[in-house]
Image (cartoon, rainbow, N blue to C red):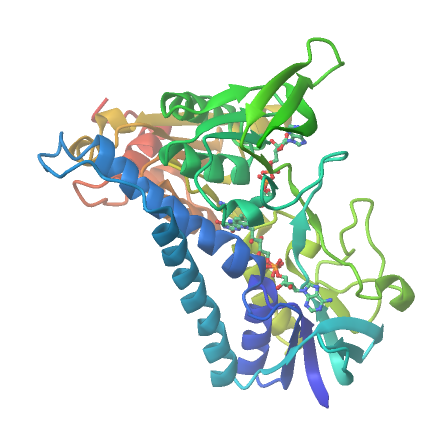
Length: 467
Ligand code: FAD
Ligand code: NAI
């Protein structure tokens, strides 16, 4: 079996790279050890978490807003098994979609664990132990990432879980302790808080969503507290032990051991980050080097330290996001086909799918200050937006940051309903090097939440109308 390209791992990085390369005329095969394609994102990440976020958000809306909107129903109840079944159906339809796309684009699939024997040679070992060797001009490592463990805490994926176990708990826990106020902790913490769990989030730092703009982070935490989530900031979990049928969680200040306290929990979710997954790939033997954080080292064209071996997605440096992996997949396929593939790392949006949603692109105000870049800022709250009032979605604001001299937009940060969709006009603007004036002078339909983006841009170079 001989190919132009063999891709190991069919997450958003690998499957997109394989399809694009096939579209560009290369003979392509993929190797995947999971039964289904789509990687972390489609099987145990983006897609199932968004299905549960949606179900729980609709439940929350029906419980709290229907009466004000003039809708009378009997009190809604949670059918957890049905919610999980809906989530599984959504996953199924997404992963089978990848099978269809592989067939359509004539990408050959091999199920089993891939191991690089040498440049141009990949061994595939099936679950039954049988093995075969694929010969290829190029190899792409797209093996993704897995959850970072918390030293001394055993994960059983039933009571002490990572995101994977949290997506299929047997029942909605009475008390949930989340370790880490990052994206996973707050998305999945929100799901269970809406469904009735008492959720306590323990976070090492003094701010939620660490890398996000501080203004947004503060407003977001206030909003989550109003929704009933409790926070123990600047704290760390140092132990989890069995207590009857439940668990006892030991929490200490981030610095030092004084004032340790304990929390009762039915379930503990450990969400303290993810780490690159390179196990069993034979990288050391093949001469592929890793950096000090265990990520595969690549140059700007995704080439590893060995000719003919490339890497993309969560397994290399950069944000661990599905769309970043996909864009790298396309760029690398283009490079391998002799074209000019490129990813603009300055314009990668980041979205947290909570309620309100949080979305950002480009620099935060904190980063601009730290880098000594002179900037102008404009803000606009959704409380002054007509559509937001009509939708009972006034929680949040838009912030636009532009260069003080040239007015080029350097960052946009949104917290509010639909922020994850609204952010893309900022991405397009920034991709073309646009200014806050360009954004403000672009006609925005009325009444839309997006008018708040226009007004925040007006607040940068002039004055907003509705505030
Ligand atoms: P992965 O998706 O991890 O795929 C790697 C694949 O390689 C896997 O299928 C694995 O089985 C396979 N593999 C590994 N080793 C081998 C081997 N030796 N042989 C064969 N196959 C192998 N990102 C977003 O942008 N938006 C979101 O909303 C979002 N939500 C998330 C929610 C959760 C709960 C989690 C955990 C992650 C979420 N992410 C989200 C992150 C996103 O899932 C990852 O950034 C993305 O999946 C990375 O894609 P990838 O192709 O690099 O790797
Ligand atoms: P994260 O990096 O977003 O957050 C981890 C948090 O845990 C940080 O705030 C960190 O300070 C804290 N922490 C670390 N060690 C700790 C300790 N010992 N005690 C208490 N707190 C501790 O990581 P998370 O949430 O696990 O997500 C991993 C990655 O998955 C994300 O960074 C993101 O790339 C991706 N993801 C993206 C989503 C999206 O785009 N909507 C959704 C879910 C995941």
